[in-house]
Amino acid sequence: MIIAIASDHAGFVAKEQIKDLLLKLSIEVKDFGCFSNESVDYPNFGSALASSISNGQYQRGILICGTGIGMSIVANKFPGVRAALCHNEFTAQACREHNDANILVMGARTLDEQQMEQIVKIWLETPFAGGRHANRLKLISEIEEKLNK
Image (cartoon, rainbow, N blue to C red; front, side, top):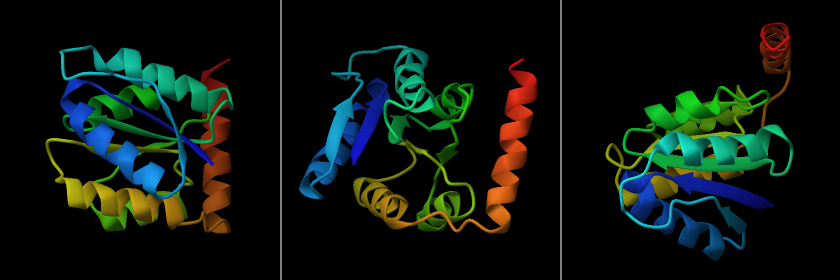
């Protein structure tokens, strides 16, 4: 599995820490930036990663900014993207089980390193439950198709 990852300047240090975690877990990483803590515009990095998920180049990704809100908004503009802003272990598990979230979004200013690592591990390990949740994803896809015509 290859995980795409990106951040803005506020999430840069956290992104580097999460990259290290992924590599320790023997997971390949594609880094879309940013590459320092110098101020940047998060939509540029969030859209690059989300586009790669939307077009099928990568299956899953992680976005990090100050709160996670901006990256979530950007990522969810792309067809087929289900970006979930997670604040704790429960939301990480639920977004995978119920929503088959393909992008994990976190806030570097709202979570500490240990919390982020736990969220990532749970998000990676939790499978999609299917069943009634699959029908809900189908409904979301239908809405998306209708709006993108």
